[in-house]
Amino acid sequence: MSILAKNLSKSFDGGKTYALQEVDLEIQQGEFIAIIGLSGAGKSTFLRAINATNAPGSGSLQVLGKEVTQLRGKQLVGLRKQIGFIFQQFNLVKSLTVMQNVLVGRLAYVPLWRSLLGFFAEKDVSIAKRALDSVGLEGRYHERARNLSGGQQQRVAIARALVQEPKIILADEPMASLDPKLSEVVIQMLERINREQNITVLVNIHVLSLAKKYAKRMIAFRKGRVVFDGTPEQLTEAKIDEIYHVDQAMMEKL
Ligand SMILES: Nc1ncnc2c1ncn2[C@@H]1O[C@H](COP(=O)(O)OP(=O)(O)OP(=O)(O)O)[C@@H](O)[C@H]1O
Ligand SMILES: [Mg+2]
Image 1 (tube, rainbow, N blue to C red):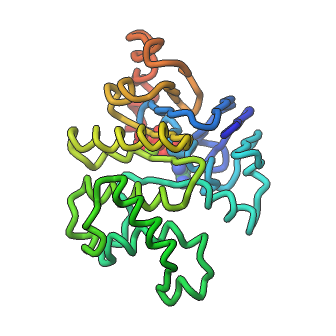
Image 2 (image 1 turned 90 degrees about the vertical axis):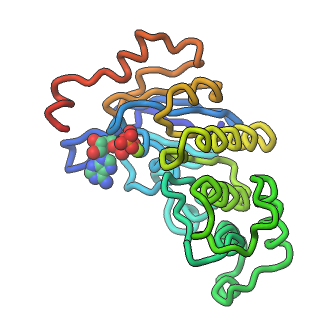
């Protein structure tokens, strides 16, 4: 089992906003899942719960066999090492080179004194090169990140996640800053990584057509609850209307 949520809830503002409500989900190692839903539905909160970026809520959440809500210190670092996170805004250090950005993903494997000196072993550098080659950035190792296009920067971020040698990759709207063509390249890469390396991939995505085209399983959140969990074929028009319907209460919040 990769991820197991039981009755998982998470609130903010002292219980006024429920970002996740009684979520029950079982995700096996190696699944490729698209997570959909309106803005504010709880998609990012769910991903952040998995790598324990948020303070824990209530219920149970097991990730790679560990109850995340109870992990502290070293155990938490150990879990996060196995989870790669890809962001909408890439989160690269723009003044550093492509290679240096990817090596950041190796930090958990390198003693602190060495990383402070910027000294990475040949092995780490060759792992980084292999990851960059696999996302089509061979020969770009020493360019500054800022000189790359958005699509290329996102591929650097994917390579950075890969060199962590993760069991799980969480991608929070990784294509939202990209134009449609590049969006498809990014999701294709995630799909290939999932297939070739058996890494569980969860991707939050706004573009329904891409989600349906690449994901084998789709999970929809609405007001913090799971309102759909099935294959793209099972996602009917009526279901889509229910997932994306904006009601009066939501209008008032806008
Ligand atoms: N740190 C926070 N403090 C207070 N409220 C928060 C916080 N993070 C999320 N929320 C609230 O929790 C709910 C779910 O937010 P979340 O960011 O998970 O939604 P989302 O589905 O990722 O939306 P989007 O598509 O806009 O990214 C929203 O009502 C949001 O305002
Ligand atoms: Mg979000």
